[in-house]
Amino acid sequence: MKRVLIFSTTYFPLVGGAEVAMKEVTDRLPGWQFDLICARIQKGLPSVEKIGNVTVQRCGFGSPVDKLLLPILGVGRALRIASRQEIACIWSLMASFGGFAALTYCWARPKTKMLLTLQEGDPLEHYKQRAGVLYFLHRMVFRRANAVQAISTFLGTWATEMGFKGTPEIVPNGVDIAKFTTRISPDERLSIRRSLGFGEQDVVIVTASRLSKKNAVDDLIRSLASLPPSYKLLIAGVGEDEAMLKALVKEQGVAARVMFVGKKSHDELPSLLQASDIFCRPSLSEGLGNSFLEAMAAGVPIIGTPVGGIVDFLQEGKTGVFCAPRDPASIASAALRIQTEPGLREALIRNGEQVVRGGYDWDSIATRLDALLKSISV
Image (cartoon, rainbow, N blue to C red; front, side, top):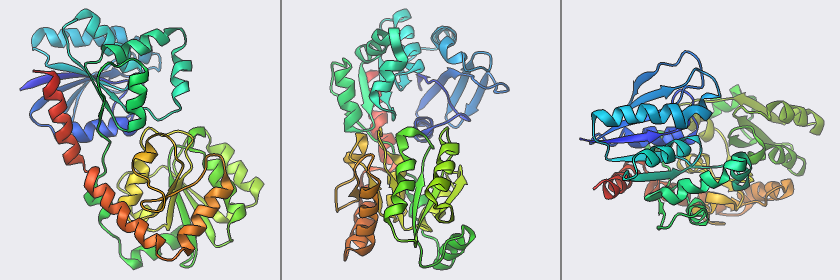
């Protein structure tokens, strides 16, 4: 059984979409052995732990500083593993601290084959700013990679711009099809809406995201000023902008129309989505946008901005409706169009589910990544 070393900044229980995707894929690849090396970051987490099909190797002292030490401590751990068993290839989950660790490992073992996965969702200029004087090392991660898997065409183009010499493989993240397409009953839907303070005739716009600048939830709140009082907003998520957004709700005089429900587990999301009428995230940047895909699978029409990876799956008037970035009035216009244009809502639901079933199933995605790993580890 071939062994792969994965370098990642973090892993479970400290997760975002990238870490969830890695677990979904590795759980479906029993023919490989995976060791994932990451920063500990939080005190109390074990040094070594088996999670799914991955042996997690955490390095550091339980502090955010551990990320900076990963290229040293993590590579030391990786070299000890490699001394005991041959490594087929290494796999960098994003071109961040894990990418720097993967690059350092390749300097120590120059013949190593490296797969780089791009899952970045923030505006690309942020990564240059964060790298600062180490930006040249950031670019070297791309140049050293033997293969790049990007979750969207947008990120594939970025890989080429950053110096990757090959052709990036566009393999998106997936959706738990069975979980999100299993429908709740009309009675369950009504019960959930009432428990949240929404009436049967209300039009509930839901968003599920980190409450941060790049997801522009403030624009969604401001859009209510251009919508009838029956249009309500359900916000699922937590983040650094939460206090600002709650203050904005009061400032806009829409407290009776907005419900914050905090962070919801992945198991809770399908019913929350299906109890709503429209999904919207007016993103300023997006690596792919898995929340949109989950909403499509759940049978909820989507509104999104034409940025980043969203354009890979959102076709105007076919699988969703576009709004303009930083334009609350266009969000309102899109919502009204979905609710009033004859046949549009039904077409968006039908086409959206077909798209997700056809190209975003985790089993087929894992099969594609299995082939990619084999291609660079021969």
